[in-house]
Image (tube, rainbow, N blue to C red; front, side, top):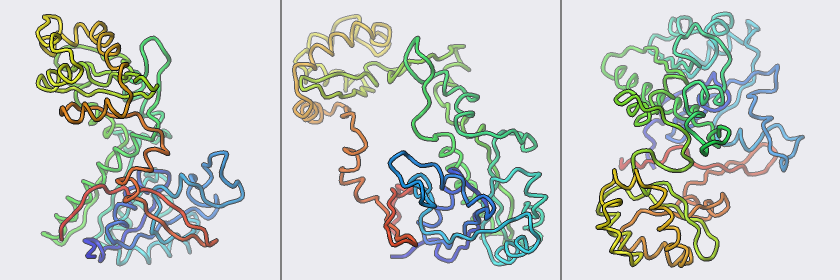
Length: 359
């Protein structure tokens, strides 16, 4: 197999999730990725982020495995000049540096953009910050950004406490933004021969991902509130129904044609012409009554037969699967990456790249 980045060398001066996810993006595509970890603290802090079922004596965690596949791990103390020199040696022929150090810390440790690009003018220095102002060095984790960027206010059930996304969503969004910036920088270097600095922040990445929620407010003044799994603009969309066998399913009816087919599949063609459900706007306005009617009808089917019925009708619907059920899917099985560890055990994680390239 031809790997498009097999000639690239990436130095990862990043920990936790967003930066390492960018490093693994390049590792999966063939790049040599050297991850610098803090020897004084035992390395990336996620090495110790373990579930109760994991060995507390191990130097790695399942969390750490998720974004640290196929990397060379080098433990250094960047407060020491000799270790700084080791990093500088690595930079001489590197293509990309990924950093989430605070600017002041990077400067003290001589791994700031100016220092490293002076050593290697072709270097692409990719910086992850917490907030839009790079001088704002307030510590920030994903949870903080989910709160500050409005996600917590929107997420959850009405009249209930806020609910965070169950993955570090803002980190992942920032990682995607930084990948895109790096790819543009690589194209620029291919044309000009010059490296550059690219950067993004968790805050800006979060704001860029508010999409319709932000647009609803900017254009109408509507402040979105928690709606559980429901959608503010579409109905029935995100509504959860319990089948006769107790299995939950969700609908995502996004078009008028799909609503018509839903009513036909449920043997309720009369619903199509009722004025309170005739258009999407009508359905959003009368969501409560609509969902009650649909719930009564869908409760007559077991999940398997209902899903088959809706699939045949072209109605978007899904089973709510737990993680064990998800990992049994052929698509998930095909995305598992394994790696043998120093202790002889095998670690597993899913690919972070979900695209295919025909090269």
